[in-house]
Image 1 (cartoon, protein in one colour):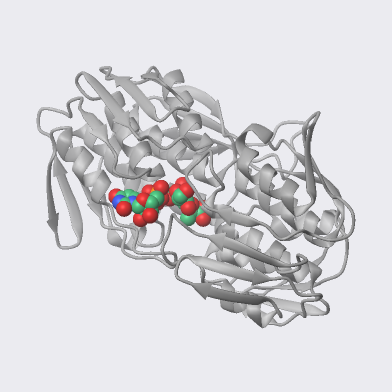
Image 2: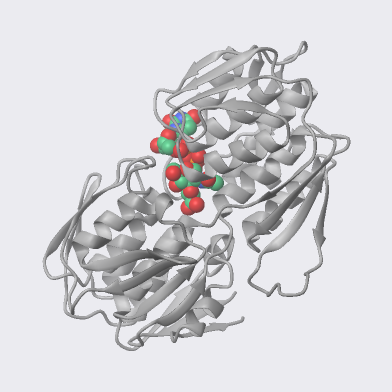
Length: 429
Ligand code: EPZ
């Protein structure tokens, strides 16, 4: 199994290209199931999760092909992927495939909308919390589907097709918004989604669906109004930049005291994050082509951070901001309100010398003068990368195990970090 070795202490300086967003690419690929024509997606990041989802989509009968590179494109330009689901030959998403990646459960919406039936394995638990699917099932029922749970599978049928409905989510859910929005594009009549997720990735999927012929109003707001159409057609769409990757590298630069330009990052998607960075003493400024990140002065200030659905501070940056604050000059408070168990990185950060105490959904981080490298391992993607951030500033060498978590969501991480001066090396075996 691969490991990553990081020798800390180098400042990061230079430019880091930001990839297409994993959390947009996954639902966009799934949206390809809604049409018998070709959906062409560019700027698709090369990630283990994308490859895994492609296996799942192929199992339903979709042809997935990658276009070759064109002149001027580099290894970091992302892939151009064509999804062609001319015939859906199998409406089952099996346990072996779904259990490894929760987002694959989202095929439920397109399959039910297009084929009027779906049999999708329940995703099971994961390292960051229980993550139920009750909102999805309730919404599909309200849209006229019969839902049974049989042998660990959601068996959904809507013989006459789905019908429009008014869905009000009790709590903001990114995945449930994706699924209902996709399903509603081919339902009979109008669907209104209240308390919809406003994440930029949801808006990106909505824009792609519109270019496929869907009728969606309220994109980017918490009320989505979707008029069902008979069919969707092919389209070309570019995946939005990964705001979580951008935020992560911003904090890596801030941690080491360097200055980087995050090429392609969009400030509009990171407002709450930028405010927190400002308070912490890190300047994140928009400029032509991206965001420039620089620490103001020597030290970092302690801050209060609370995760919230977009436009609030993203839970997917919580582990990373905790890593950053381990070296702030005072006590920071971090409250996680989205997932109940997303503090698995705490014990590993402590192994590097951090001083963190947990109490329920709140972590108190007392800044220390130095971190010291150690062998660490992480249980999920964002937790892993928080250890990378800490390691970049730690004295000596950190050995990060279970690198496959990073490969799920960060394209060419060691390449991007080495290019701006980090001492990072992947060791195979
Ligand atoms: C998406 O997960 C992201 N995944 C997650 O990113 C992200 O952390 C999360 O949204 C929140 O922003 C992808 O986009 C692929 P939710 P999702 O439904 O959709 C509760 C990463 O590291 N809930 O918005 O699964 C749920 O338990 C990943 O890239 C229900 O109670 O998250 C949670 O408390 C990890 N019932 C809250 O809603 C339901 O039926 C928000 O979860 C559905 C959700």
